[in-house]
Image (tube, rainbow, N blue to C red; front, side):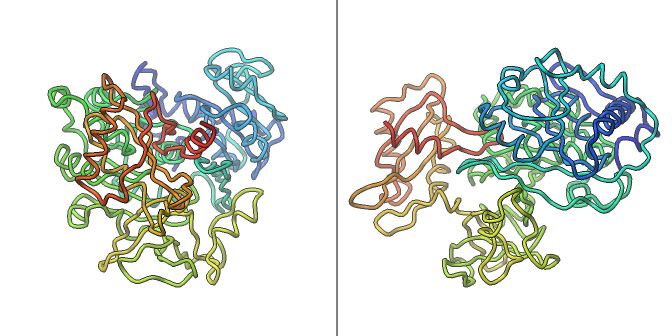
Length: 511
C-alpha cells in the first residue's frame, strides 16, 4: 500500500497532523503533492536508483519528499540537521544525491553546505540558490506516473564513533502499490498497525525509526501525529488530545517522563494507548519496570540497527520474566562470538553477530566503503554480520546487550561495561544525564570517568561528586566506580538517544 490507495478510499482522512501547530495533511494532499514532486524529480532527470537528499525539521513536507522518492524508485537520504556544515556536506556528497530538498527553517546549515547537486528546492520560505518548492509543485503535472517502482531509504548511521556510514540495500523488485516492503511486513503485523492507528512520533524525522515507522503508518492507512520536538508533558498532552494508540520512544524519553511530578503524569488520560514501542538505545532495567507499572503490559521493545542486519523483539510479559533482555529473534539468528570468532556458550559475553540464511554474503553494504563492509563480517561466515555490539544469550535464547565494543573499558585486565554504570545512575534524582567512558591510565591501562549533567536546580560540585561516588560504591563493585566525575551543563547526546562519546573523549584529551 501507499498513500494513493488511501487517497482513493479516504481522501479527507488526516495522513499527518503536527502535534504543536495542528497543521494537517490529508491523504489526498499527500498523494497529490508527492505525485507532483515525483514528476518534478523525473523532469530533472532522476531515474530509479538515483538519490534525493532531505534536510528538514519535523514538518509535513518531509513525508511528501519521502513518498515522492518511494513511488519513483529513488533512494531518499534524510540528513541530520544537527550536524555541522562539513558533516552534512559529506553525507550529501557521499550518497551521490542528484536532488536536495530543504526546509527554510534550516537555512543557516543549508546555505553553508559545500555540495554539487543538480536539483535544489526549498520549502517554508526562501533559501539562497534554491528553487521554490511550492512553485515547483504547482508547475508539475498531476497525471498518473507511467510506472511506480518501489524506492527505499539510504540512511546514515549516527556516527557516534566516527564518520557516519551510509547503508545501501538493493531496491525492492516490486511496485510501490504492491505488498512486500520489509518494514510494513515486519512491524505492521508485529504491533498491530492498521487504518485505526494513531501513531505519535516524538523523534526527529531524519532518524531511521521515526522515518520508517511514519511510512508504515501511511502504507497501512493510519494517522501520523508528529511532534515538532520532544517535551515530556507535551507528549502526554498529545496522547490525550489525539487519542494516540501507538508510539515509539527512546529510553531517555522514558526517563524524562518518569521525572515529571506524579500529579502531572496522573493528570493526563493515556487510556487510548495500545502499544508503546522503544528502541535505539539500551533501557535501564529500573526505568522499564517503572514504565510497565505505569502504563501496563503494553511496552514493547525491539533491537535493531540502521543496517537492518538482524533484530530481536520482546513484549512486557517476556521482559518481566527476563528483565534486561532485548528479546528473541525477529530478523536473523543471533550468534555470540569470542575474539577468535568461535561461538560462546550461554551466559558468556562476546561480539553479537546475526546470521542471515537468505544471504550468501553480507545482507547490507556501507555505501562507498567496501573495507568497512568487510569488517562487519565474521571471518568464517560472510552472512554473519555485526555492528559492534556486545552481549550474551541466556539458556532460553534471550539476548542481552552489555555495551558497544568501542565503549568497553579494560582496566587492570578486567572488562568494564559503561552501560551498567550509566544504568545505575539513570533515575538518581540529582542526575539528568550521564556518560561513562575509559581514558588512558599509566597503571591500569584505562580508568573509569563519568560526565554528569545535573538535574535542574542541582549544583554540580564536589559535594555532589562525593554523593554519587558513595551511591555507586554501595551498589556495584568498587573497580567499576568512576574515578573522576566531571559536570557539564549538557552532554552530547543525539536527539535519538545515543551518546556521542567520541566528542567527550576528544574534550577530555585536550583539557
